[in-house]
Image (cartoon, rainbow, N blue to C red; front, side, top):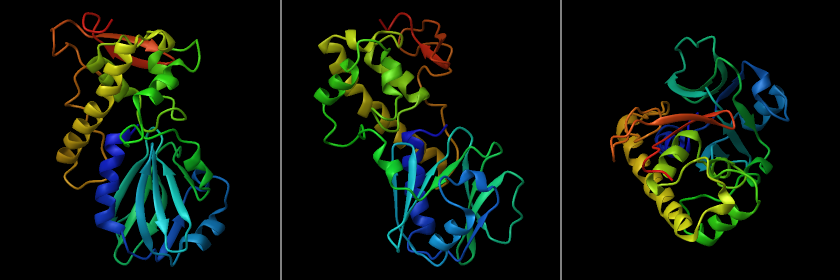
Length: 260
């Protein structure tokens, strides 16, 4: 699943492709990807409108239209974006197409789990952005200590609590902070919360740079080759073998020596 760094670069590169362009046609091939509206209502709302903005909130991509409506997209686990010439034959996995003058933006997902809506309330359900200036250490402390039960990883991947961080980057953030992912969130010490607060922007900003370099203007792909521990075999810091465990049905990677 694409996470904050991936989606941040998709947003950047989408702006170069579709910003200030008119949607000339919309093709809803798999209507179940639409949430709370029909294909005909979607077409009526978007065709002829100009894409005036492209933003990211958490794991959502938001296309602001000239009408004031917003197309809100969650790519889920397997969703991908494709920017192709309109004349190019579409694949069987294509769920939705937005056509512009000569090119098309295609939303592709073999599972059709992609979620597309015009309901702006979806944006309000997402937690604070971890890279924004108003995301404070006190705010993080409150998120971690809000409930007595629950692991630190569980809190950090909860999109209602913090936006955009997923399974892979939580592993990286916890490694950077030296915190075992199975630790109880509410029992973290102040110095550990501080280390975690410092690790979040460090890891995410580094990842954004790495993803930008690897995607080279593209709008799909989830580069992970530069990560330190997620799906890796050896800790780059101490050379200890990386351990894999299951936490809340998520494959979790950590260094048993560096993370306590």
